[in-house]
Length: 441
Image (cartoon, rainbow, N blue to C red; front, top):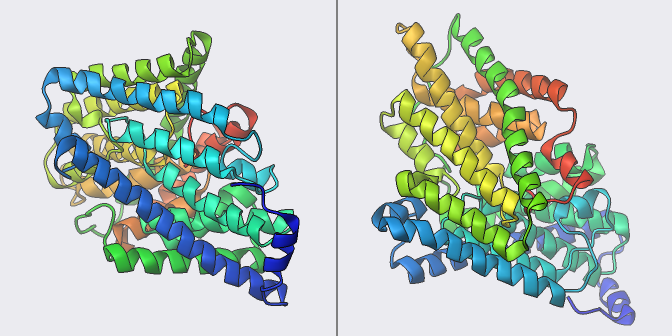
């Protein structure tokens, strides 16, 4: 964003209501509207480019299955070259001010996010996502929404504290728009970014989340992100089964994070430049997709496939390992995108694998594999983010299944505390201590 003259900022801020709390709620409404529309614009741009490149909108996995082996090999690499070129040359043009991502802007920054830098990163992310990168498109959507909040705050000449709060409202609106989870969107900021809960902070977040959700529902309707089968109520010993799943997630989440960290360190150690790194990461995904095309994309299609069709435990184990490797290659090479949705994928596959093993040992159980998948998604996400309350509500909102809440609460809390005892800092805290390879979320 070009530098805004101070006189103009003072003049336009005079139009705000004199009461500070009312003016903040008014700006939260604007941020909710702008955040939702920016997320919709990113999603629509992705669909449009996807249609231009592939002449259909059937999803990344379906596209990978239709391509010849050499197409699956080369397309992610070409996308990595294009995305890396945009970052390498575009960021030299962007001003060196403001935070690199929204979490930094909220926690240790002054709330300033560069418009140019954000747009360059999100454009780079589009190049990677439409060519099969194993990364989430929701991260850039949230980053764009946070940029809207930062820009509005600077236009209205807000103080640093209020500017950070407006960025948080943008993050809330972005998560709400990306996952159709308004309550979890607000709690994401509270648990991960601000670390505190107060009426002065929560009210603008709720307003922004509600407005964003209204707009998203108006445009896309109220649909669950994952098409979940009916969840059977748990009884008796099954409580201990879900507690065991929480333990498994708490033990495996640090391994998942270690794989991501190791990939990043390898790329940094042997770095030959961002373009080469991202091309190499794309080539790695392409090589994997020759044998397993389902590693393309953020994993929504595969999770829904596991939910509604029979998978053997061997197939689950294979896709789990390959998806983790593909995500690590993308994240470690510097690909811009989120790891939130791939983390949900890993939790779903881990839960399904756990359910297969458990049901082979106790065949009289009436619980379906889908139940362990839902709980595994939340417990694994809680074990990575260290935000159990947000994860509980997010899975509930994404699945629209109230029956899942009880075992989900138990598994999320167990997984969170076990993982935290192994690695004290969450994946988001760690990103503030080291150079982040991807857009947060």
